[in-house]
Image 1 (cartoon, rainbow, N blue to C red):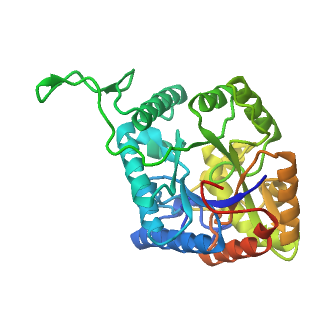
Image 2 (cartoon, one colour; image 1 turned 60 degrees about the vertical axis):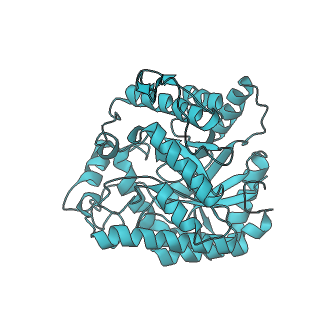
Length: 395
C-alpha cells in the first residue's frame, strides 16, 4: 500500500530556452550566481513547500562540474543538514552519493554526522555514477565498468562494517584498513568510526541495469531500490519488480510485490491530458538533451545522438526525436487531471501491494521553480488525500 510520497530533484536550476529547438546542451554555461545561488535557493523553496504539504522525502542527486545547470549539487549531506534546519518533518534522501568519488570512510563519517545533526532525517543512498566527466576526474573508473563495479562493491562492504561494527578492519584490493602501523605504543589492528550513525541505516540504490547480479548484490547487503526518476526513465517495470521479489526470496525474504522498492514517475497535472503534455513538452525534450547522450534514453540512433551532442545548433526540425506522447504511452509520464493521476497510481498500488513509496518528478529539466511549486501544491491537494499517507520513518 502506498503510504509515502516524495520527489526526486536532479539538481537542475531554472534555465532559458529549453527543448529541442532551444539552446544546445553543450552550449549552456551558466554564471556562478545561477549555478550556486539558483540551486540552493530552489532547494530551499522545494523543501519548505514539501514539508508544509506533507510529503515524506525530498530526494536529490550528487553531481559535479555541471556548468550547464542540469545537476548542480556536489554535496548532498551539507545541503540536507541546512534544509533540515529550515523544516520540521520532511526527510531528505541521498539519491545518490556516488561511492567511487568518495573515500568510503569519509562518506561514512559525513553521513553519520548528518544523522546525528538531523536526528535521523537523512536517508542513505549509494550509486556507481555515470558521468565520465565526474567519476574519472576524481580518479576513479567509469569507462571500465567492471573496475567501477568492483570498486563500488568493496566500498559498500567498508561502509557497512563502519556503520555496524564497534571496531573493524578491512583488507581488500583497494583498501587496507587500518594499515600496519604503530600507534601510541601498540600495533593498529582495527579502527572505530566516530561517530557511528545514531539510527539504524536504511540503504538505497538506483535500479538501473536491473541485472540479476546487481539485485543479488543489493539483497545480500539489504539495500532497497529506487526505480525511475532522475536520470532513469520513470515508471514501474513489471519484469524488474517480479525478479526483485524472486531474488529476495532466494535470500530468505518473503516480500510482497513491490516491497523494498520506491518507484518514480514524471507527473504533470492539468485540466486535460493534452494540456498537460503541451505544458511538459519542452521540459521532457530538455531531459532527452541532457540524458540521451549518457545512455538513459533507449533506442536513440547515431544521427539523433549527433544532433543532441552538437555545438552551436539546435536539433534539426525534421529529425524524429522522442516525444512526450511516447513517454506517456510507455507509462513513464503521468499526465492529465488529478483524478486521472489518482486512478493510475491506484492501479499501481493494486498491482504491487508491497510498494509503499512513490516519487513524483515535478522538477524536470528546464521546468521553472514556479511551475514545480504549482505541481507540488496540486498533487498534495488533489491526489495525496486519496492515499493513507504519513510523514516519517515509522509510518
